[in-house]
Figure 1 (cartoon, rainbow, N blue to C red):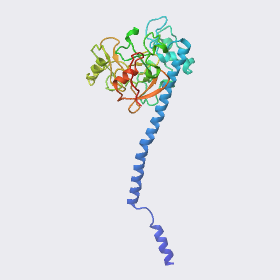
Figure 2: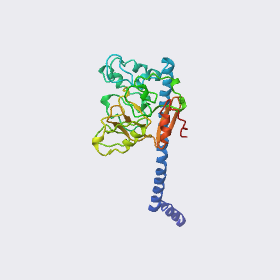
Figure 3: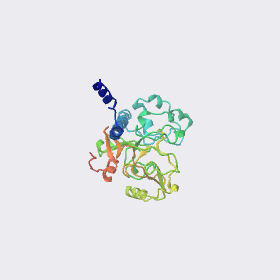
Figure 4: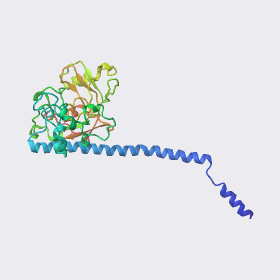
Length: 322
């Protein structure tokens, strides 16, 4: 009987001590702390893969557009009747990404912001959005947003008409063909990414915002250096431009002047700027090349290499980052 009673008391005293419990909790906390970054990294890898797929669809849509019309889409398609805001490359590619129903609702006779285009303008297109973008549409009243922008070149000109001023693939009244990409389709960028703006001129977002500079750059180096020298903490230097919406507007282009995730500036001279690609992917941006491939370009890319990718016929020969 006494032996049974002793065994019973021993079983009753076999629970965890407070110290043991705390050790177990600490170990679980460490394991969770190690696991969460891995989960977040896996999720970002999946988002980046989806973003890569979106850009690939846009590049291949350009191929199909070229097969149909024997040219690439215009970087800024003018309304056919009424003067005003122009239509983006994305808008012209809609029939080639299985969005003909949205394309058929666009009235190309009138500007993008015309009431006749409101229904199409407000339609969210999944292919136009990077899943890593965490910011909501900064200006929903303008229309549905996008994170994808077309390459207008490596010179500080953005909206000035004239084929001699632009070294990229897309600009106002483009009539380019594959034969015009003499640098090679695997060495010429078509599309990249752009973060949405914060939607406020009362906040400073160094990568998301566009800043105003009174200078008059004539070269890529001029534009890059002037923009870097600007005091962006002065809210008076914020440019009243909200990147991201609507996807239908031709403003969704970018330049290979400043490196990826660099600072953006619009200059006093109308139509001049440095508008680099940007993203929430750690360390760089996705770029769709004219051969239909997509490559990840780090923010630390050599600036000459980055600018070379932005030209269609510059004659440069720089290897893409591995």
